[in-house]
Image 1 (cartoon, rainbow, N blue to C red):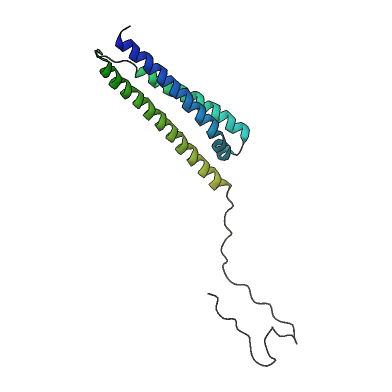
Image 2: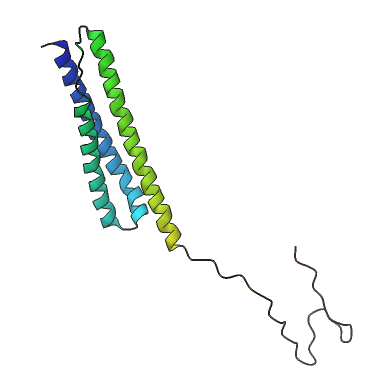
Length: 155
């Protein structure tokens, strides 16, 4: 077999292996995050499955499109350079897909939490009058005939 064919085989094996490994890790570890985002375990599992399928389709589609190399590969070192470039691009696509998903789901979660948050009460417009003390009773510390008791201002 020619060096280019070996390069393609190694590229496919590494790229598909990385895609499967990352998809499983994200699916397993992302389940908790999705349950927090959606607050429903059944919906979180369904979205997780859909994200994994979309992840496979996008990444494996990119892997197959990026596989073609028009120039001849004459040496092993040239094959390794091309292979590292292609696998590096696959890793960048994997990372970009992951960060896009986390960003989008984080925004959805913030919006949902904002909608569920109770609104703060309306600020008072004025003050209620102080209840008058019954005749013959005085507030604590007051002397009869000494005048009104004033509280020090609150800090």
